[in-house]
Image 1: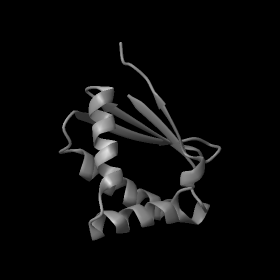
Image 2: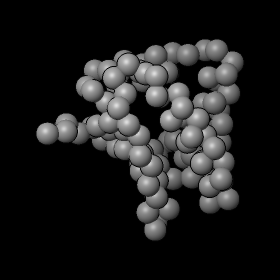
Image 3: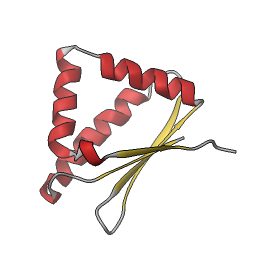
Image 4: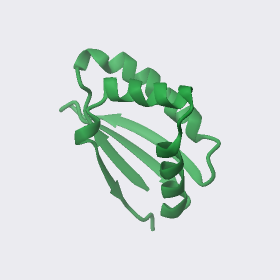
Length: 98
């Protein structure tokens, strides 16, 4: 399981976040080893994305493939994500589900 925490670049981008977050979930559904994704937002504005994968290896394989994408649609989605989210301060923690 991966828990990614992030903040928006601007609170006025919350609706934009909801749109791109839904797109992310749509893309993940067909990925090998992907189980689920939940998104929660605390009172402090921190957004936590809880992603469950069959294994850390499958999650890492997906992330490496995502980073390597160069098609126009993927690059546009990454640019949109960067416009909405403070990606520099985004954190990821890995957990093993027992």
